[in-house]
Length: 118
Image (cartoon, rainbow, N blue to C red):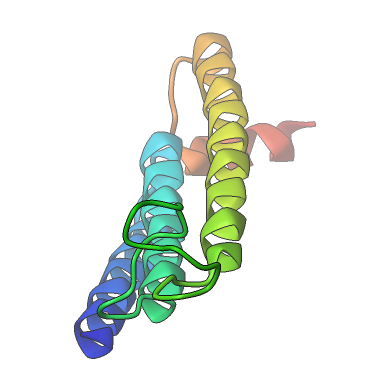
């Protein structure tokens, strides 16, 4: 099971990085980086998955702490990282929208030309 998750995560990472390096549109670059970031979340959670163990929520199945439960720390860390990633992506996309309103395009080559004129 870990092999499938690892292969899938690295495939998504490759798709995201190739997309970020090959595209010239700012929106597509940030979307590709978001895909690459999600693949790292998938990989990290997948590596801490254990067959036969339950989520760290106390239910009738779990009577003692730690019995048949996965470690909650990686899950909490990834949830925190996802929230931070969404905030950073929202801020980045707001910059992209403002840049589009100012210039009318999202091409990074034209952005480089703006810096050379100064």
